[in-house]
Amino acid sequence: MKKILIILIISSIFVSCSEEFLNIAPKGDVYPETFYATESDLEMAVTGVYRVFQELYFFGNALAYTTAGRDKTSKFNNFVEVDVFNAEGDNGEMLRFWAYAYQAINACNTIINNYEGADASEAAKKKAAGQAHFLRGYVYFQLVRMYNEIPFYLSEEEVSNDMPLTGPQVVYDLIIDDLKIAEDYLPTNWNDDTKRAGVAVTSGAAKSLLAYVYLSMAGYPLNDESKYALAASKAKEVIDNSGTWGYKLMENIADLYSKEFNYENRACEEVVLAFHNDNEWGCPKCGTPGEYGGWEVYMADINFFETYPEGPRKDAIFMWEFPMPNGTSKHYTELSSKHPWYKQYWDGKINWDKPWEGFDWKSSRPQVALTHSNNLLVYAEAKAMSSSPDASAYKAINDVRNRAGLPDLTEGLSQIAFRDSVVQERAWEFPGGYFCTDPWYDLVRLERVEASVTERNPIENQIVNQPTKEHYFAPYPSVDGVKNPNLAN
Image 1 (tube, rainbow, N blue to C red):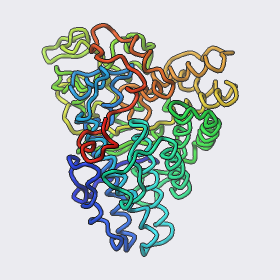
Image 2 (cartoon, helix red, strand yellow):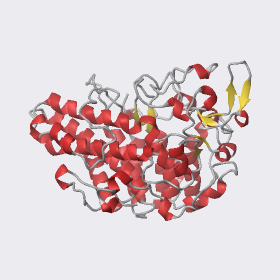
Image 3 (cartoon, rainbow, N blue to C red):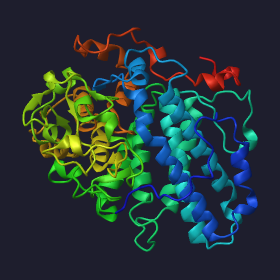
């Protein structure tokens, strides 16, 4: 496997998520410069960062911010307030994500600032630094898209209770620098390292994420359209050399989610970046109906489901007929939630004939962040917007459409019509649980949040505030706003 995933060892070296990110002194005590004395010290420190990533995506904390999109809704208070555009600074899900995100940044900063002094080979130091640069870039990418202006620092010495917020351009510049270092320092695979094989980030993951970062910069709030060409070039580099990392579209999309290919700390060839759970993390109950003992944290939006094109992709992603213990079956309209559900990340332990027996709040299903289909769709859109929708752009989107059971896209579309078709394809390809490529981010970067609410079914949660640009980004945690007036909402 040539992907990222979590390696589980060190939990005790990180403070609780209940502590604000500004309280970083305990982490500094854990990581004195002398800690990085040997190669094993570096490896232990990097393992600790992966461990924080498990916490970062536990319970779907990163999904709360995206609930207002077209693809999902919720019955869970912290998600509902986002869904109705009434999020507050005490939102527990986003507060938890914020805290763990800065824990990860603190740990990555310390590795990056100290790895060169370790008594280790240059290769080992570069591998440690490459992972830290990638993971820091990834977290800052998530934070800047969620909050736009954020506390930004590269060492603990820069942190204070009155530190100003940094705008997105500076943050994105650092993300680009981090990912360029990562693509240079990281190996194509970790097959020579039994502890990292199949579970650590690679140069292919860095290049794939960098292409997506460029695409994001081309939209709101930066609107730097020069980045389309860079996104197309970087995505094409990955596509043209996909065999280097073993990336490919699975012929049967159901295999992208099947237990046979994605379970017990492994992922199929289509997965570029994911977070493995190892039966200790994740939350299948978060995305399952109450009839199966689920917590109904997020579910499929009715209109999104009803307008979703029929075919193998819909069959693989959604569930709308539910077997019951008494031998009957219920249509989603007969459930207490009155909604269809996303099944693609229900745990691989589930017996589909008796799914109510297989749910737990822990999972071994990898939580996928990037796939090779994202590389293809990034290329298709970026190529069209940087020059024209040529044959290569059509091929990229058609490969994804054909695998989903859809015909080729209409030939001869204008640049904007082609772009809009790709964006729609992204929404169909990545709904209901993709942490990095959630359709919500396309609504923001293309400034379509306001229009998206008109597509809601009347029985969905009633909107409290009609969205404006002020609702594009998440509120800062109120607990940190008390300490730093720059974080006041």
